[in-house]
Image 1 (spheres, rainbow, N blue to C red):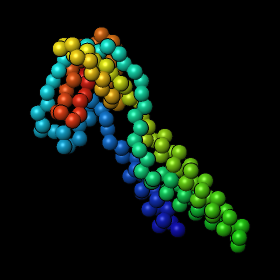
Image 2 (tube, rainbow, N blue to C red; image 1 turned 180 degrees about the vertical axis):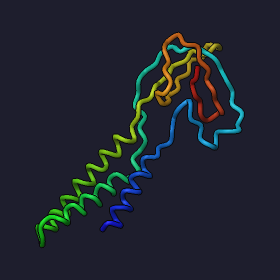
Image 3 (cartoon, one colour; image 1 turned 90 degrees about the horizontal axis):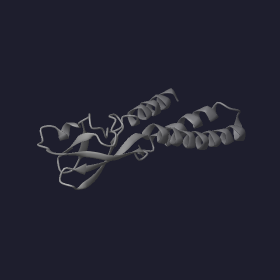
Image 4 (tube, rainbow, N blue to C red; image 1 turned 90 degrees about the vertical axis):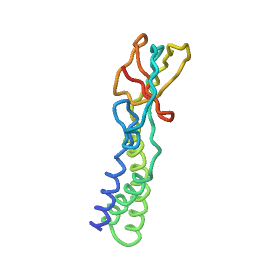
Length: 148
């Protein structure tokens, strides 16, 4: 049973490594690529939540831990009921915890480009923007970031 718990814990920790959607973090595949830069002025900033879809690791890990906890209770049919209750409760709790870990604060930044076009970019809230700020939109054709 300890091996199962260790495996589940390792899976839960691996599930915590979320991809970044930040103007300051570049995945390896976005390096050494030419990017175009446009300039503009921030029109508005709105707080949003960036949600990463659940992987199921939380539900599976929670169910395994809940089932293990339930197996330590009672014996016979009472133990079976405790295992089933532990599986269900642990799975729901694990799913809820994973959902909370995967959600993080973001910003929807609306920028009026110098060309007059209006663009909105959503990214992690790791750099603050205010209406009137002069900014750069850095884009490789797939990903666009707003920076000062």
